[in-house]
Amino acid sequence: MKKTATRLFWLVIALWSIDMANAQDRPQTENLKVKKRTLMERFEPEMILTVEERIKLKEERMAAYERHKTIVDTLSISERRRKTLYRDLVTNPRSERLTKTLAEVEFEEGEAEQ
Image (cartoon, rainbow, N blue to C red):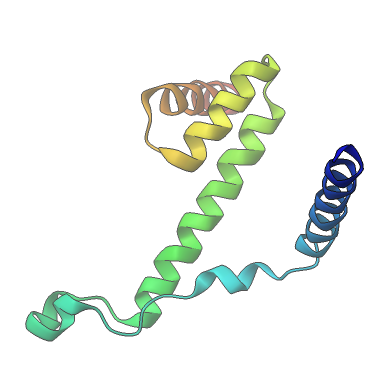
């Protein structure tokens, strides 16, 4: 029983490490898939954005995410707070904690330019 559990553990670790190695090679454009048609498009077609517009908005959101992530990376804060800000960035990009941190950084940059 113990040998089986140990082998299973190492198998899971090996598969996980292979997946992590492959994840670095995956292109980021795979995530840009959007639905070609939506349910609301059937009833209110003039209110719906086209596929190209939705892809453009998604690319803008991804660019904003990357920009905010680099800002959080450069801050001199504790690792615990950094992880909290990363979690906010993914789950709730408009959280008060993240907005306050980014506003302070942008405010300091504005003062340095003047």
